[in-house]
Image (cartoon, rainbow, N blue to C red; front, side):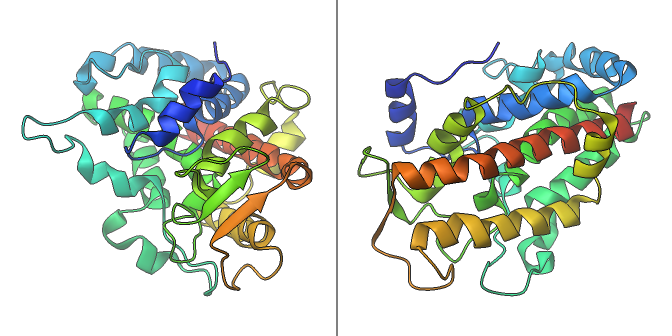
Length: 286
């Protein structure tokens, strides 16, 4: 159902100048499949009923009939253009992240003005999904956005940054791989995420109730703060080699030893995303 992106396909995706989406396909689909394995049967059945109405989304270019397709729909629609060449769904771009400065006290108010941030959209979509009186088209849209956005929130560079567009402005090397457009954000979105997910036992499984409750404790604000903290204390601290708020080098390098040290953190973020998505879906549909 899911697979690692072939190297050259991944490289092509990196080099094309289009808006990037957190965790690429493999990460988003893994988070969705973890949730699928841990939701209640009734929730699963209601999700299938909604996804069968994917035609109501009005995006035949972007499928959403399965949990895997739904997980990447919100990134797929970025490529749909109006006749004048502008993005048809351009207003949704800001919903994939929140620019919370890692070098300032944690605060979502400024980052989420007008609800234009990922955590506000997660709350909005969950509320809409719970409303059985809402139009079916709105609920289908809320579902596919929700599945994607919970994944986005657990990519640390979509939750915290330091004035560099979530690491997009930080040129970086990944092991021995270098490319002119390779940056810290794309490494955490794709190469590092794929390395982590495919290392060790599969993350897609039914977790014990105690584990599900522990991981999914708290709310979206708590999870936002936690992901922001990972961005500060792990992502930037590792890339810079010390103080995350110190000067950022012209180009950072993640060598193989560093990549290995980061794998457990990325695996934990994916697991958190999946189990928290399961909690939200059960709360809205279970």
